[in-house]
Amino acid sequence: MTSNAARRLRKLAVLLVSVMLSACAEEAPPVLAHYPAPPTPRPAAKPVERRQAATTRMMAPIAPGGPSGPLMMARVGSYMDALESDLRRHVHGKGITVVRIGDDIAVVVRNDRLFGASGALNGDDVLEPLGAILDGYVHTSVWVNGFTDTAGPPDANLAVSQKRARTIADALVHEGVAAQRITAQGFGEAHLRIATGDGKKEARNRRIEIVLKANPERTTATR
Image (tube, rainbow, N blue to C red; front, side, top):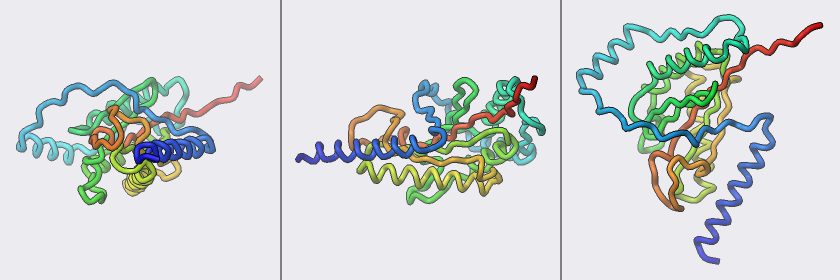
């Protein structure tokens, strides 16, 4: 058997295992991998402007506008509008995209914004404001999905994506988000953001998608 054929078989086996694990869950984790390509990024701000922006953020703490009481179904749209607005205001920069599809929101972050070259967590500038916002919007479930490119064996890619998703989930808990709201899942090289062949390095495919779904209170009609 050729090396390419062996790789394809291993890749198929990993994907089948991933599908079986997802099927056993109460709810399949949402994946917003097929969203429109982000617009051309704006030129980076000058260093002085970045320092001023950082000072402004410290002087004006994040204060999410989510309601303190139960979230009614009729208010889900406005609730997620407010969450999206806070995310776009406080969680932004190169390598970060906020995506809205219906009433779901995904914060897509390239791995190089979250992890150092050694693989160690190095994303406080992203995770601290994100955690502060999610801590205030308590009526949301948080799905942390990890993805890789096709470089490396498929089974190793799956394990790496699972480890990184779990690392980000734990970091959000550290930032104050309740652990019971968070689900972490790795998908390896499935759901590529940028289509490539096998064995290709592509930074845009190495990412974390943090998918946010509203949890409105469901009322039961009475006679």
